[in-house]
Image 1 (tube, rainbow, N blue to C red):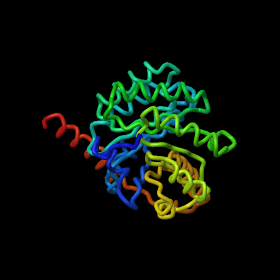
Image 2: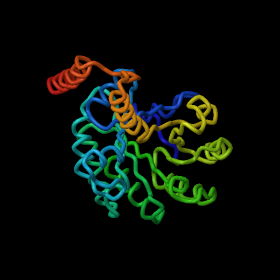
Image 3: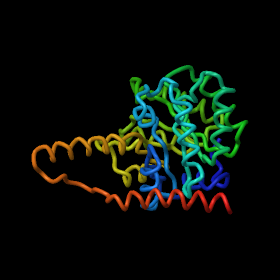
Image 4: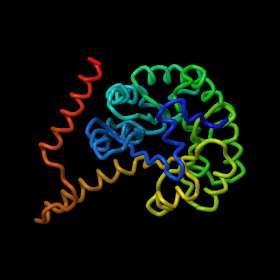
Length: 269
């Protein structure tokens, strides 16, 4: 089925003609607040950063509680939040549905569920269970045929068709960068197509022209932040002033205060 743009304002962001949702992915209060201050109406989380920050493996269902903690912290903020929930942190559709209820209860607008190239019927059952439990939650169903598979076009379409029929509101194919294949998928699908931005792939404008409705940044910003920290310490060790943007202490404290202020307004509103 095709996602109804009136379900939530988050869903509506996927249905603006010629203007895909550019979704930056945050990993804590400060990164989310800084991105929101730049005018992004919706923020995603990134499972890699959530896991790496506490020394746990990504993609192995090890960070359910950490993900819920972050969602609880960010879900009441004045932007729309989509949570990267790996494969739902369980093989049981009922567990995925319960996670969805908990995320919705703290203000989350969307959830990303990946198939990890596991059985498509099992992933479809999770999607159906989540939509039955929380119909308003935007479910972005991800297949890993390009991310960790061989990029088989027929298998990609088959999986996405199954997930769409199960009720997914959006469909995500990370690792796909070929413009012709992207355009062909857009024509094939009824639901909005989400592509993971790659510096070596099409630009956001080019993806928009191909019909892509959502462009995610995944762990890119987090990895860039780590890289910037390593570059800065190398510059300092060599006697150079670090290059790049460096928010001041006061600017970071202002982000902290903006979070506190928005929480107070939400609690009294």
